[in-house]
Amino acid sequence: MGKSSDGRLVWNHSTHIPKLIPVLEKLLRVGDIRTITPGEIKTTRSHIPKLQIKVSVPIRGGFKLIARKAKAVQEVFILTTLDQASLETAIAQVLETSRT
Image (tube, rainbow, N blue to C red; front, side, top):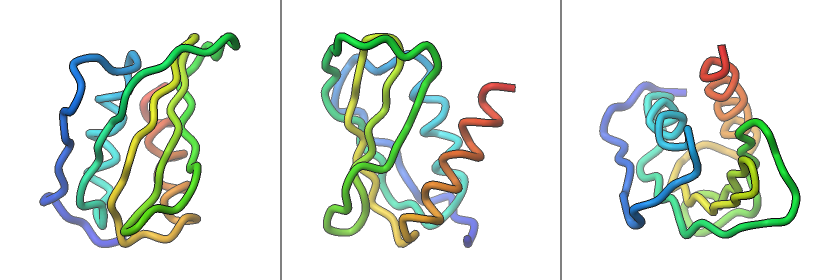
């Protein structure tokens, strides 16, 4: 994965899942990620105590992720040249370093 600092985080909404923005900012430092855009927050019935981020589906130029914490769920759109396995590895590493 190449290092790049020209990725950007788009602020479309005023609210985000707790601790999501710092994780996304760290993910930008991985490189090969052009744009991260968090979507709308929705509520769910299940409770997830720790922040989880999973790759959902491919989109044109990247992937849609699903971020969950507590009773909130938020879509996150990432434009990247990384393949799905590399993105999943990067997400796992960033989440692990964010929890320690």
